[in-house]
Length: 431
Length: 94
Image (tube, rainbow over all chains, first blue to last red; front, top):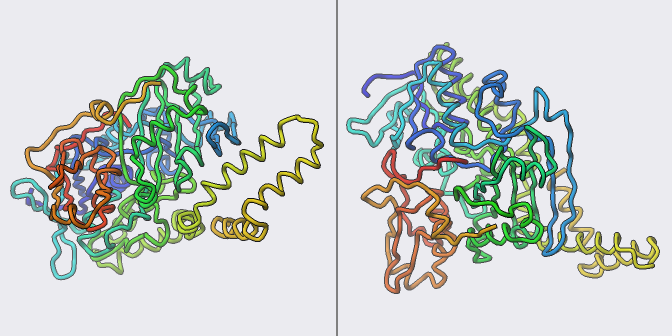
C-alpha cells in the first residue's frame, strides 16, 4: 500500500462514504479505510435516515437502498410512571415521494452505501485500523494502519472515524470529551411480525412510525428513549448523558429493560423477541464541542466533528452533508493544488454557513441548561401528567376551578417565581 | 416481552475476539484505593468490567467499543484502543 492517493477517508459510515463517493465521482483517487469486517459492522444509530441530504448524494436512493419504512408519523410522549401526555404529527404526504425520512437498519444500509462508493471508483479496504495520522512539517500527509507496511499517503486525509475520533484527538483538534458531552445509548432490535406492527402502531403497508419518549423513560434523567418501526422489527432504545448515567449510578441495560416493561410501552412489545443488543455513544455536546474541522491536509466530518443535533435527533443527515461539503472543498483544493489549512478552510466556511452549524448554534446552550436544571425531566414531566389527568377526569368540578387547581398545584410545588424562571430559561435555550 | 439479562443480551451479538485485549486498566491500585464506586462496573453497557476484590477483570471480548469507559473513568485509568482490524464486535442489524 505504498502508492499515493488524492484522498484517504478513515471510516465507512454515512459521513465517510458521502465524502468518498463524492470525491470519486469527481475523478479523485480515493482510499477508504474501515476497521470493521464490513461497513456498518461497528455503526449504530436509532434508525432515522433523512431523505434530503441522502438524495443530494444519490438521487432517488429510496428506489434501491435497503430501507425499512418511510416515517409517516412522529409521536412524542411525556411519560410518567403510569401515564403519558402524548402529541405528534401524522401526514400521508410523508409516505409519498420525495418522503421526509425512513427507518433503516444500519448494517445493511452502510454496506449498500459503501458499495455505491466502490462503484464510483473508491478503493474500500475493510478490517484495517488507522493507528495514527502521519504528520510531516505540520501537515497531515497520510495514515499509519495496523497492516504490515501499512503506511499510505494522500494529499488530504478525511477523519470520519466516529464519535470517539481518536485521530482528531491525536492531532490535538479536540481534547478528551467530558462525560456530559456524550450520551450513552443502548438499544435492542425486537423481532415482531409486520401485521402486529401495523395493528399496534396504526399503520398500513409501507408506513412507519417513530416515538420519542421523555421523562420516566430515563427515570427522569437527561436523555430520551425511542421506538422506531422497521418492516418486521422494532428498534427500542434509551440513552442519557454519560454524566447522568454516572451520577444516577444507572446500568444502561437495566434502564432499557425498565423501558421495555414500562406499562406504557409493554403492549407494543408483547411477544417480541430480541434479535440484537447494541451500545453506542452519541456526541451531544453541540456547538461548543465542535472541534477544529480543517487543518493542513486534514478534515473532520460527521460524528468525528461532533455534528449531532440531539434535540431533533438529527445526525446521519449532518454526517452526509458534512461529508459532501468536505469533498467539495477537497475538489476545489485539488484544482488549486493547495491542501493547506487556509485552502481547506472552505469546508469550515461551508459548514458554518449551512443548516448544520446554524442549528447547532440555535441550541448551543440547551444541553448545558437541561444538564444543570434536571427539573425539566424529573419534575415537569410528572407535573404535566398530573395536570392532564386532573383536567380530563370528570368529577363534577368546573373546568375553570380545575384550571385554577392545576395552576396552583404547579406554582405551589415549585413557587411561582421559580416556574417563571424555569420557563424563561427553557425558552431561551431553544428559541 | 421477554427481558433478557445482560449475559443473555450479549449472547445475541457476534464477536470476533482478538487474542489480546484492546482495553487496559493502567493501575489496579487506583481502582482499589481511590474509586469506591468502581463506576465503570455500573455504566459499562456490556458489563466488561468486574471488580474482583484486588483487581479489575476486563472482559474485553464482549466490548461494544462505545468509548464510555475511557471518557467516564474518573481517573483516566483506562487505556482504550480499537481492536485489531476486523476484530471485536460485529453488528449485523442496526
